[in-house]
Length: 279
Ligand code: SPD
Image 1 (tube, protein in one colour):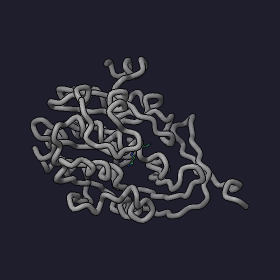
Image 2: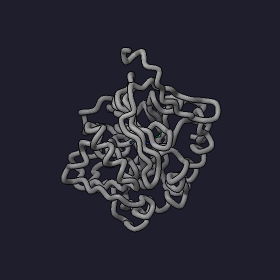
Image 3: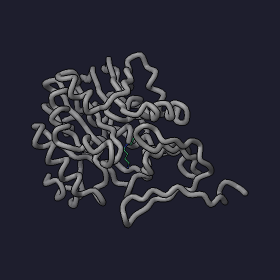
Image 4: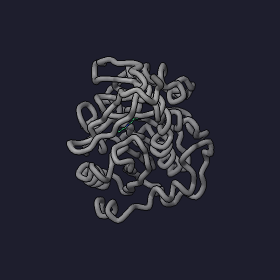
């Protein structure tokens, strides 16, 4: 039987009424870590697929969109990011993008589940490639506690969480954003992945409100990730001083999705999303 004829499917139940299915060639890895169910599949369409607790985290073929957009929009918004913290993101995709910025001297990855880091190194080596860079400090810790314990330390904090269930819930709540505010230097900024405007309206509204109550500047922006629920994905940026709208030049060019035009286009919101967050 050829690969295209297998009838094995990974199906993510995105909500009670919606699924996404990827035909798989085989299961590569499956384990119950201390924190979650971790599975890696070889898919026919998207290469290797990382799944945590039944939710798609990343695939070989479309990972660049999410990782570039969560990293480069905020990093270019800061004029000189030297010290960067990534909360979550154990696969290393955000770190890979962070260290493309020549100004970055130190990039800390605070990931709670060391098994995600190890699985990514083994099954997604191109995504995890930055983790061995000498500027990178991988900490297997609770990101919420790490942020609380490091006040006034970072220029940029990027929150690459799993979906807002289980251990990630606290990463979508106001006390965490307040703690992120304190962990940033006086002109620092943050960005977080904030799910789909089509099916996570309440969450986006709540997070946007919490970030706006915490930071002087708040901006929602969008990107298109084929394997994430509905494809349309949002990110919420909170900043003490700099506005993403003011970026004039792009310093990193070895990207597949991000560029100066995409930076500004991502800040332009459809009317239903504008209404959602009141921009
Ligand atoms: N539903 C998808 C949400 C995924 C957010 N994090 C992905 C991790 C990739 N580094």
